[in-house]
Length: 188
Length: 403
Image (cartoon, rainbow over all chains, first blue to last red; front, top):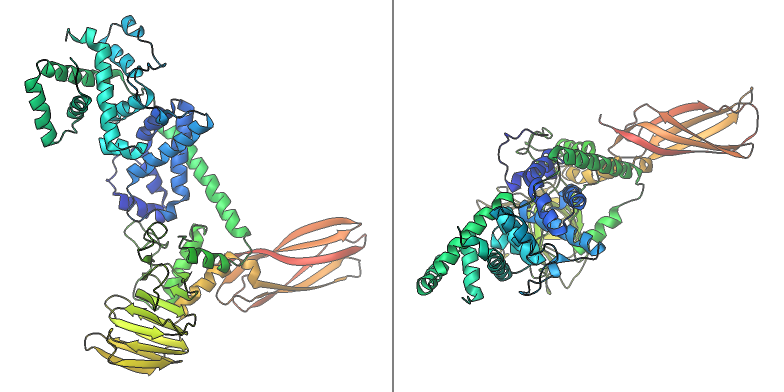
């Protein structure tokens, strides 16, 4: 692997590397986006083995089509979208699609149980449970914003939803998390 | 307190830092009017902050381990591609045409690196050029692969088709009217997807060889560096790199060449003639073409084919007889009919039937074999005790010699 103390390469440089069959291009992109893409895939698919497969496939595909990359490619959205598409395909095979879930206010999620909120004492644990209680799409948008530091337009772009939808989901997410935590927050 | 969802959205935006100035004013106004609003806002900030500490995915598999897997996958893939490239025996010109008319992009991605470098160095040899080719030495050097881009041809039909080649690459394209165009390195052309209704117009920077389909109703017009070339159907070479005076050399037919669109002054050029447009003085010069090698750059395409499909360019003739000790002796010649490539390590498959069993040998003739050259070889079969039938010898493959 290339050491970390590398100069920063622009997308254009990286594209040039790839066009020249120089694997440094692949390696630099891999180092830069591997962890983020893995977590992104995991948020979508919630299985470690499949997330790893997806990340592998994203970079492998990139290498395969390296001579056909668009001229002004922005790798970050490109790779995330590729990961998203692969995740969706995988989910279709598993016959699940978290992206088609909306965020209705009253349907409780099956992933966590409200009673769990009482079981943990730590506020951070409670917050995590509250996040787990969110409906899938809502949860996904919130996590991408919070843990992956993605901007609204980025989330919208990667998930193929409108920025307005991201705004709404974020609003709902915070509203619901606060509702669950309200009894515990008053002490802060 | 019942709070409108738009307020929640604004609050969410606030803690994620996505709030615009106007939205901030709106939110502040709401908070000022609603007691308890400030409290909620603070609570959300607390949630946001604490959510980050134990949330997310704790475990990401080791970067290096996954990289190893990826590297392995890539290696296997590259090997299989190299094998495919060796095994292809068909003429690919048809595929080229199909793809060109459809407006797809493709590059010689199937060539292995060494081949691409070979091609690249051949270009440097063939094209009389001041550019020193030093092969790959990092990203600032010329790329050894063509960069071909069609500006969203399929999705935006109103836009011109653009083809642009980087240094050290060559391609041949079929245009919408079935005219063919060979593009030299660093060349760019652009044209309307289906050409125009009354004329076929195309823009060129760089060097290209045209073989124009005849269409008397629709003249073919090339605009290049201030010059304009009009033809009906013919073949010619047009060199018009940026900062150079356009030079047109006619191979076949009749071509009109002029300095500008008004075509007040124009040259009519025929086979063997050459026109130059002196841009500084705005003058056209007509002369006999004395340069024999003006089309050499175009032959690189031939060369590429030759190095991709060696067996298509190697002819084998052989005779055999049983010797005094009843052993089959084969004598043969291999003739290289390629015009540019030199081959070596020619692999021949010798197959025959012995006692109704099929036998196969691969023999390798190591000598190198230049274009037009013939080499002879001898080979003996281990078939003293039996009848040998259906003896066949064919060229399977060869490697390309760089010298």
